[in-house]
Every structure is written in C-alpha cells, then in structure tokens.
Picture (cartoon, rainbow, N blue to C red):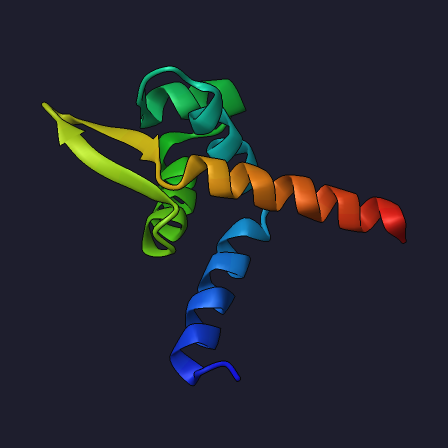
Length: 98
C-alpha cells in the first residue's frame, strides 16, 4: 500500500511531466552533452526567459532537474535522466497499446 507522502511525491512528478513544454525542456537537457543556460533553452523553445523559468521551477521542485548559478546565469542539468527516458518510453508504449 502507498503512503500518503509517496502519493504526494508521485503526484508532484506526474504534474511536472504532464506539460509538453516541461517534457521538451527535460529532453533537451538529457540530449545535451553539457548543462544548458536557461537563456539557451528559452531561445531553442522560442519562449521568453520568464516563461521558461516558471517551467524550470516546477521541474526543480519535482527533483527532475538541478539549477545552479554560474556567474549571473542559471544553468540546468537533468537528474535521473535515464529513469526519465525509460518513463517516457513506457508512456509512449502504453499510449500506442490503446
């Protein structure tokens, strides 16, 4: 049986993964060989910095990415990248079976 705290944690992660923009950010980070500046992510997504930063905060709060300061910039790197890739593959497989 799941404990309430486990369900809350799962809900936070599913909520973070439930947005196409956040999934694109995660995939971009996982496919990069090095951490990316938020400005680079915003440029790639053709979004403004503030919009991307709000999505980044959700991903950080779900412990899916790490955000750290480099000078005056914020840099992003994925946490548990392989686990996220597996989850996305399973979700894709699940949706194709229906």
